[in-house]
Image (cartoon, rainbow, N blue to C red; front, side, top):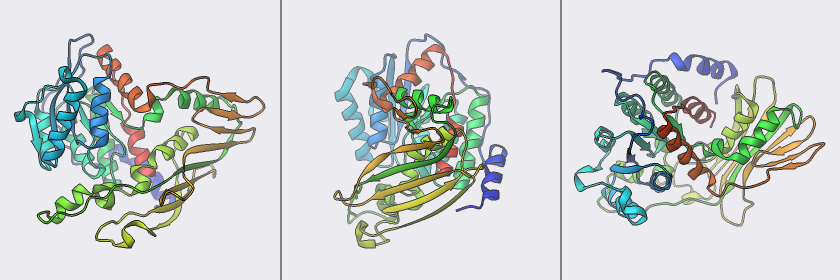
Length: 375
């Protein structure tokens, strides 16, 4: 991990670092017109989160229509279109000529006449896809994490600034930022409900993940892209791909990002340690240090179901403790009074479409990139 000075330098310089983004041409449809009849959107990446985000957009009150789909694999494209048609065929208009396959298929989908693009591909691909969407003047919803390394994060930060210049929506799939229970609890922490924050604990401890066996006709590239979660260059490991949610909450609570990290991890169970099949750790522990010396302790795990499992966050202050998902224990105990039935994934799409319909533009790219860098 980087030294404190290197991390500070990175965050200070990243918004102006060269990112290799080709940004030519005029400002294209910089904002969806308030009250216009239809929001046309394209889906890039047809895995569970991509199709889930598309369905959640279809569940909003907006007049929305899916008009293009892209994925590296043909069966994923067909499966996504057919599955979404079963949910609501009236909101899906994707004929065969707008179903694109291959590693460059994202360009063809983004090139289709659309207002909004979902980017839900493996994170190693996202920086270049974000750059392309911004260059084409599209509003964007991009799943987390947004990159797998520092150069990718710099590219995302640069594209974020270009999106602001073009007045383009850039939403990032860190959905806890849209959940009322997190929003209110963290606001209370910021208002002093538990005093000064002195320590945090964040966890994503759970079971294993999927694995797709190699087929006889698969190239090494196709095998790794199909098994993207297991390869560092395209996934970033469990701490980046999954545990980012909890690390993002910790940084949100603190109102800043760490300057130092020390950590350890390893692979004990996954694929018997065969590094040709999987490169990612099945357990990690990290100690993050903020500029004022306070700590955030992080646990991540993919081990058997008999192991202790927990996903969440805890905040310790000088006057009490808090669970950012809706509970404060201090001089006065407080619980969030209700749970939003929509859930975070649905709520973030309601917020996105509602804002586009009203002509309101927000940009979540900076915290998406910096929380990715933290993870």
